[in-house]
Length: 258
Image (cartoon, rainbow, N blue to C red; front, side):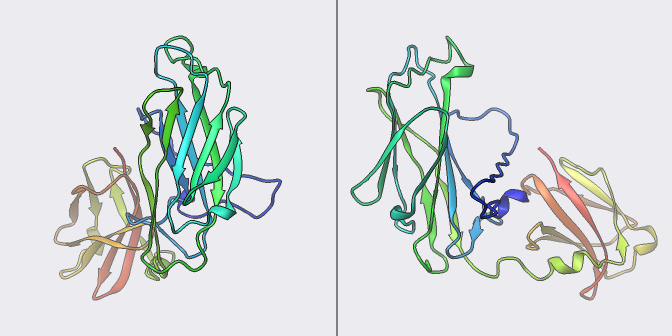
C-alpha cells in the first residue's frame, strides 16, 4: 500500500525509496512511483511521477555506450523533467515531441557472464503531468535501451489513469467494525476459511474488498465455517467484511500470497 501514493515529502534533502521484493524478472524494465490505486493505477490530477529505468548488459562483451530513449506521453510536461539518481554518470537531452534521450558514455558495462553484479545500471527522473489533465486520461510510458550498436531492448509499459474519488468512503467503516473476523489460513494462497460461529445469522453476507475499498467478491454467509476461494484475485492486502442488511458486523484483514 505504501507505493500507491507519493512518498515525496517536499524536503529536497530527504528521499524515500521503497521497492517490491520479487522473484525472477526482466533485468531491463521500467517502474513508476506512485504505482497508483487498483488495476487502473489511479492517480490524481497534477500528481508528479517518478520513473526508474533499469538495464543490464546480458551480451557477450563490454558495453561502451548505453543510450535510453523515452518518448514521453503527451499527458506529461517535458519542461518539468528533474534528473535523478543513477548508477553511472550520464547526460540527457530533449528533442522532437517530448523525446528524452539519456546517454551513458564510456560506461564500460561488463557483460553478465564476466561480472554479473557490475553488469547492471539504472537511472531515475521525476516529471509533472500536464496541468489539469482530463479525468480518464491514461498516461503510458516505456523506453528503448540501446547497448552500443545493437537493436534496442524495449521495456515494459507502465501506465496511470487520472481520476478522482477513487478511494471509496467504505474504507472508513473498517476501522470502526465492532468485531474482528477470525480468518485462517492468513496469509492464504488458494482458499481461506472465515470462522463465523456466533456471528452466523441467515441472510448475512461476506464481502471481499481491495485495500482501496473497491468491492471484489460477495459470498452468502451460509455456514459456521465459510470457505472463501481466491478466484483469480491478485496477491496483496484485502479486507473481509461481514454485513447484515448493509450494516457492518465484523471485519478483518486478509493477505493473498503467490
